[in-house]
Length: 202
Image 1 (cartoon, rainbow, N blue to C red):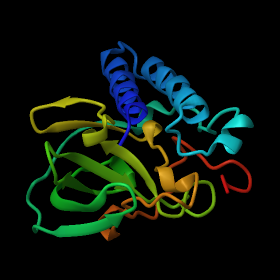
Image 2 (image 1 turned 45 degrees about the horizontal axis):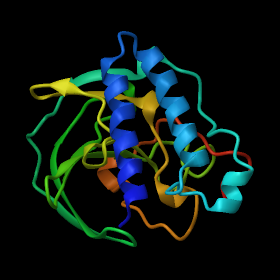
Image 3 (image 1 turned 180 degrees about the horizontal axis):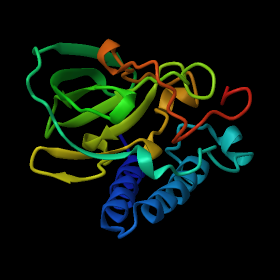
């Protein structure tokens, strides 16, 4: 653990705070894109190594689609499930299923609570683009324990598929990440959010 990682976490938290404060969701998304590019391309704790950062230009992102933004309640009428996921940097990550959200025709992915100090909401998604236009293990929509929080109120969450982003393991095999379990895998192609460059990142 280092102070540069602390800086990364602060920047991510500030970036999502700006997104939540934006009057226009698309303007917030544009600020998020610029912030993500600055972090991935220039921060010492980027998932890209120094050599890859030297040639980085931008993370490919699909155009914004306002129909893919949802403000939805969490349906908590689900069977409890616990998963223990080993990772390289964070040890074993404990995930407890707390509900599902309905995202139009995309489906009803599971919502998880990440155990550990403080905890947080985790919502990964592996859609029909996985393995071609996006990472085969899926992308993340929310990971509030690390600052990726689009907001909401009461039992409702803002889930905007335009903010789907790749986990660190997409960029370099030295990383391991919790991937989308069965309840977070859908056949629908979500043509939004971060995409892979031609040939992938490695």
